[in-house]
Length: 309
Ligand SMILES: Nc1ncnc2c1ncn2[C@@H]1O[C@H](COP(=O)(O)OP(=O)(O)OP(=O)(O)O)[C@@H](O)[C@H]1O
Ligand SMILES: [Mg+2]
Image (cartoon, rainbow, N blue to C red; front, side, top):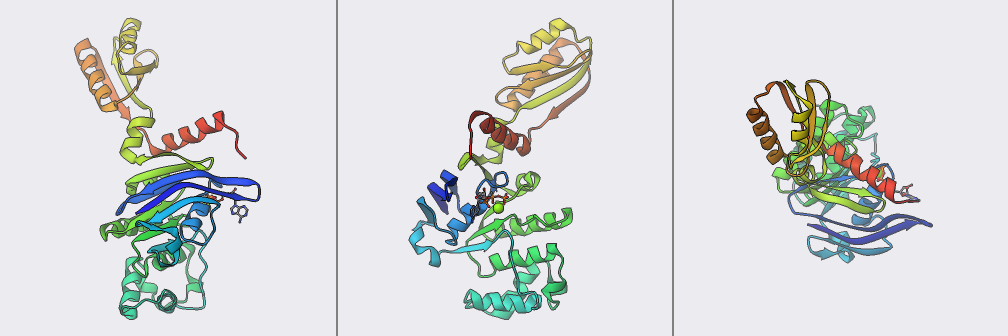
């Protein structure tokens, strides 16, 4: 659906995108991650044609970016502005006119307002809306004309936990309708909840891209902690010598084993070892890796090895 190849962008002498390449497949929810100032908004503005790139290529649904005006993209910008003197219904009628909507405007307006959960406030002025409600209006604008690719730049930034869950549900429904959604956010648990794949933008490039499962398997450390009576130093050494054990920590009866490689195989192996060892195990828990660990690892690794700015 979206293919970005070797995209470069500088502001003055400051390089922001330094050969960014990323691929977003049709029908997926793509979590676009990166620290403040990484260049997420810059990328979205270039993809939507609001900002000129320096070099690189972008295709949307196979069409080159020269066709940008006719491309099928809906966009929620980072800080959307509204005509606040209008009611919610009036504003979406205005959006219908602005995007030259050719269908039944009244029906579509009510449908979109229903989808973003603002039906009870349909005839209230936007001026009196909370930030979260305005955020929903912004999402409604991005999806109003039924475009296939929807870019949402931090759609949950102003929202409370319930509001965030609601927006995640809207995004899930867009996916069920066959839309492709690119979502930038700093709330990694949201991304873990809805995204099929993620890309981490850091120092001008995508440092990591893949499905959440793939990234979790390949990049995060996975620790199993247990407590067992009769855990001798010799047994600890035996555990440390197991092929999947990267690190063994803990003291007295507690032990923490960092698993290297395929954690499911490692977990099965450790479980088998403990069963065969005759130890009495009181506690056994796996700490699953999180997207946050992976994200921090990417940011720290590259901060330590390269200078940027
Ligand atoms: N119009 C501009 N002129 C000069 N520098 C700019 C301009 N717009 C953005 N920048 C710089 O480009 C870098 C990337 O900004 P951008 O807004 O794309 O980051 P971001 O990843 O969206 O960050 P955030 O998570 O804070 O929204 C920043 O260092 C920013 O200061
Ligand atoms: Mg931004």
